[in-house]
Amino acid sequence: MNNFTTKYIKSDIKSGLVVFLVALPLCLGIALASGVPLFSGIISGIIGGILVGVLSGSQLSVSGPAAGLTAIILAALVTLGSFEVFLLAGVLAGIIQLILGFLKAGIISNYLPSNVIEGMLAAIGIIIVLSQIPHAVGYDAMHEGDYFHIDAEGNHQLFSVFIDAINFIHPGAILVALASLAVLIAFIRVPFLKKIKSIPGALIAVLVGILINEIFKATGSSLLIGENHLVSLPVPESIEQFFGQFSFPDFTQIANVDVWVVAFTIAAVASIETLLCIEASDKLDPLKRYTNTNTELKAQGVGNILSCLIGGIPMTSVIVRSSANINSGGKTKIAAISHGVFLLLSVVAIPHLLNKIPLASLAAVLLVIGYKLASPQVFVHMWKNSKKFQFIPFVVTIVAIVLTDLLMGVGIGLAVSVYFILRGNLKLAYFFKRDKHTEGKTIQMELAQEVSFLNKAAIKQTFIHLPENTNVVVDASNTVYIDHDVLQLIKDFVNFGSKEKNIKVELVGFRKEYKIENSTTHVTSVLSDNSEPVSPENIENGAKVPSSILLVKELSNV
Image (tube, rainbow, N blue to C red):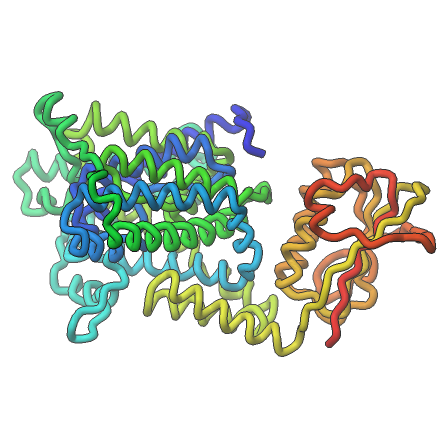
């Protein structure tokens, strides 16, 4: 799935342009919040888009400077004493990530339940909305990356700035934001505009915002939006000034213990955030593709090495830009790469024009994205799936992330999800038996009485390594509970994965509440007495089973 294709190039370029418009202020804002030169954020965004986009195993995720690293960068700058020494720690962090990729540490993403991932996405949507409303009304006291800051008096900045914005409303910014929102909604709702696939609504919304503010400027209107509420891209006056914005690591400090502590901290946090984003992006993928997370860790490692070598800050795969990519119609990695190319061209060619973009217009774009991530339909969907096993961990994850931070919130949500699962489900070994006969080339998968999200990784690996041109029977006759994650995995395999490998799937014994339609026929397999166990590792490593009748049996002691 890592091969390039031009099949969706029009929608990918269009999506890349939208992601560029979203990424530009984020790159600048996160750099500002991290206490580093603004150009460092742009470097990270360009390399995250182009280099990581090429090397990544994901077709849809977008990499760049991440809000989750800002506190670490700020603290590291104080501890290490200079930006150049910090860049050395960033290079070492990239090397550590590269090693983690070769050690196949990316497998941990398979054990993240969907209710926690859905909760993370909804929480990010809520944070986007709360953080962009102040921009939409012309109040810019908070920079991207400071969402989770709590001051000495215990005030959560996300909410305090939101409340303060009411007292600092700028009519011109509100007018620009409403006009941009009207354009975006029109491109979603109006049939004629919906058919125009070649022009992204976000681009028109931004151009409308620029035009309105230029009219305010030309007429001397009091509604004019000042420079402090416009995009602020560095504008070098000469080639020397441009190259003077690059910084380089101080390798003389490589024996400094503090450098290595910072490096391991960045590598750990950046890797976890990347794996969370990859799992979320795969869940949003309309084509239901799976990303090789080990390849992703390697790509992130290479990206961070190069970024920090030339003065950029560390990056991760980031959910705001990734969701913007998916919601804008991106289908392949060309979208992420093109967004990096647009960032590069903007820095070199049109910084003056970009500095005319009102933040209120960009806020409108992000408000639409945030609403899609946290729409009421998402909450209704999780409620209907399972009030206990799905909805409660989902809501807990949302509240925890909004009130704390991304990693802590996901950790709390995961703990709650595991608690509910362990109450009703206990996982034993996963057994494979392979028959030596070849009649029918039929593979039988008999599900256990209790199937939890803990079984997802093994079932996913089985689906991935099933031989082509076979019949597969998935038998749920003996089950009393199947986790939503596993049900969705089976649905995706039936609708997408099986078709790519020409596998005929028969579903048997699924109860009505599983919301999976059983097949009308049942292919029966016969196992020989001399069948022998085959470990999941052997299957994962490509054990040959095309001429076998395979019984995949998962047992539970509950």
